[in-house]
Each structure stands twice: as C-alpha cells, then as structure tokens.
Amino acid sequence: MTVAQRGNLFVVSTPIGNLGDVTHRAIETLGKVSMIAAEDTRRTKILLNRYEIKTPLSSYNSFNKIKKARDFIERLEKGNHLALVSDAGTPGISDPHYHLVNAAIENGVSIYSIPGPSALLAALTVSGLPMDRFIFEGFLPRKKGRTTMLENLANEKRTIVIFESPNRIEKTLQDLYRFFGDRKVAITRELTKMYEEVIRGNLEELSTLTRNWKGEITVVIAGADKKKRKN
Image: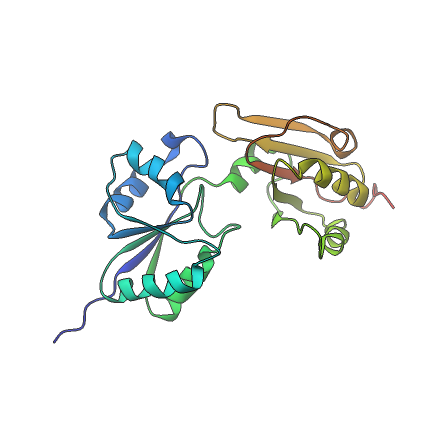
C-alpha cells in the first residue's frame, strides 16, 4: 500500500471590505482546495457566493483551534489541500491562525502564502505617518497589562499601529494621550467599504472626540519625539 502524499496548506488573504479587492490567485485557490478553514464561515460565505465558489467551509477560531487543527492536519496528511482564511485580510494577524500554521510545519506540510489585502498596511498607507519603520500591537489589553504596555510604548520611536473596537476607541484615545502626550494620529474606519473614513489630527484633540463609532477601526500613532514628550 502506498502512502498518500501530503496535501498543501494555503494561507489566503481575503478582502477587508470591498469584495473586488480579492486577487485572481486567491479565487483560483479557494475554488480548487478540498476545504476552507474560516474564522467566520458566514462572512467567508459572502465572498464565496460572490465568486460562485462551492468549496466546503469549516470553522476555525480561538474556541476550537486545538481540536480543529488536529482534524485539519489529518486531512492534509491524507493528501487533501486546505485553504486558511480569516474574517478579513491576511490570516494570522490578531487571530489564532498561526496555531494551524505551526502544526502544519511540525507535521511536514508544505505551506504557501496567497498574499493580498491587510487592514494594517491599508491604514498605514493613508495615515500620513512614517511607514519605513513601524510596530504592530494588535488590540491593547482591556485591563491586565494595559498600563504596562502603554508605559513601554510611550518611548517607542517607530510608528505604532493598533486595532480597536467601536465601543472602546474613545477610552483608548484618552489613554494614548495620557501616556503618550500630544502627537499625530490617524484613525481609519471601514477601509475599502462604502463609509470608509480617515480622521487625522492630534491625540489631544481626538481624545475628546465624542461620536457614534461604528465598524472596524485601525489606529496609527506617530512614534515618540524625544524632544517633545509628556511627563
């Protein structure tokens, strides 16, 4: 009996909003694999319907990543090809997908990147802040470790990028001003979608901004200026 050749794992970037931003290679890959591991199958289904892709979906998220990773590795070892997608954008950024990638590496599975949209890079490109050197911190801790992280980031010279939710953005802007002092910031919301918005200004003024925030938010903050820092 011959041993089946292992399948390949494809890490596929999908649109962050506008479905027209998907690449031809991504569409081709999603249509050819045996299964798609999706963070939110409902959101991914919208993309698949748009491009008439019939590939079966299976959920893969923070709650089931251990069990599902074992199941997916078994499929790959039997020769089935698998695509990995997140809610939107590039998988592995602020989601559990790195766990499956590591499991695939440990089991000798070949992994291929199908690059494309990224909210992180999209926000940087329209922020008006330096892009040559930057750091990405994902979502700030809600409570434990938040103060320590902000204290450490206060002296960071590179541009800082974070994600935030609509219900916490106002508190986060206030905390950023309290720890960082007044510096340039860009708040991007709903990038590539109908109500796309970029708000540029300073932390001092934007920390007092009150509005009905909606959608997915990425915040880009200027790095520390050692000559101008709030004590």
